[in-house]
Amino acid sequence: MKIKKEAMAGTLESSDLLVKVSPNTGIEIVINSDVNKQFGDQIRAVVDQTLNSLNVTDGLIIIDDKGALDCAIKARVQCAVLRGAEEESLDWSKLL
Picture 1 (spheres, rainbow, N blue to C red):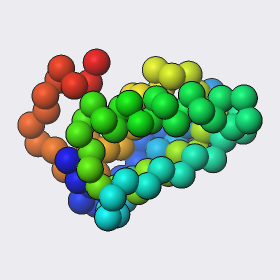
Picture 2: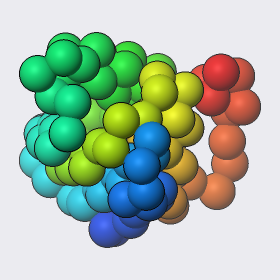
Picture 3: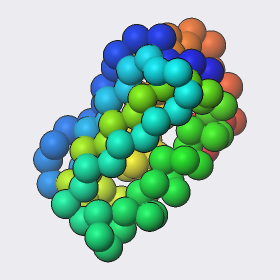
């Protein structure tokens, strides 16, 4: 799956995150987080796992985290990627 257009999901409220995606050659992930020192590795792992489950091969993913839980990170990344990839048919089993 490739990101075809800019898209976003989420908010900048406390305990949430804003995910922005845009077209790019290869995958590039940028994480800005208030809790990066404590949880940066875990945030990156959740983002990587989510992108792998969706078979994302190209795209720039920018994460602005405000202390979101793993389930919120996964949901926001899925939503932004699906919007940006303009997917019309979903394999719902990949969204678990």
